[in-house]
Image (cartoon, rainbow, N blue to C red):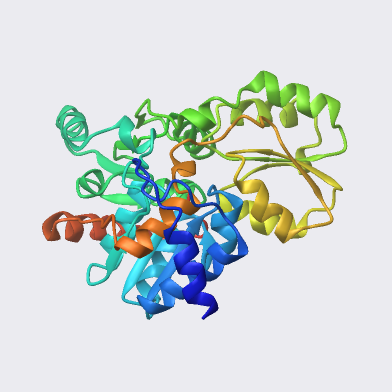
Length: 345
């Protein structure tokens, strides 16, 4: 009866609007109803680290996009509810073509994935015949289908290092991750696409320098997509901040580093949703954002109302045509064969 009462109460709050159940908020009744509906539909709920805290807390699994896609492939449930952005749900569909994959709001895109199209990649490849294409997992299925090897932010260096040094490499789409890889591999014949995540690009070096100056005892976690990653390494190299306290990490790597951190405070340069998981992983540490305005509007489209709507109405479903999915899966599999991809983006 309690579940029925919750359904009725929530249903009465449905209002018209682009996000469907716009009047619904995260409450204990909402969380219980989400869990009930998921069980009823034989669905598992996956949430990316950048999602709203209430979405992360109701999910069955929380993590980075690649880890979640691999969980989706192994999950016994028939339906995957992917609380993230569209390319992430596509990747889950690529690895689990037989399953139904839903995203609570199909408008949840990604500025980084959108920074290169399949048509642009085809033209770039034509300009560099014989080059090998390395694509970050933060790309569309169509781009992955034209890719030789995918990579994550944690294994991009290993992927590029595994390629014949005499062969040209086209690295895409993130210019800051590309610069990080080029710096560590010393590879001269590596061309980098000038794409970026607008949120990470907005975390600038001046902000990081000021935070480091005013928090000299903190550790520093920086995502390699950040525009300030070079500044972080400069601080360490110049001796202005202890090198052993500067860490360039994927989101998955940040969780591991949080559990091993020795400082009482950690400055975090990535999307602010990450703070929720870090604080859960190491509750005794004071995690602070380098830029507390670094919030992805696309990630935050997955609201409690949108998740409820998705489960009630069984939408929006993500489709990838079989030919594209097969070619895209091949590039992901090559990445996995090179070594454990570790954390995703």
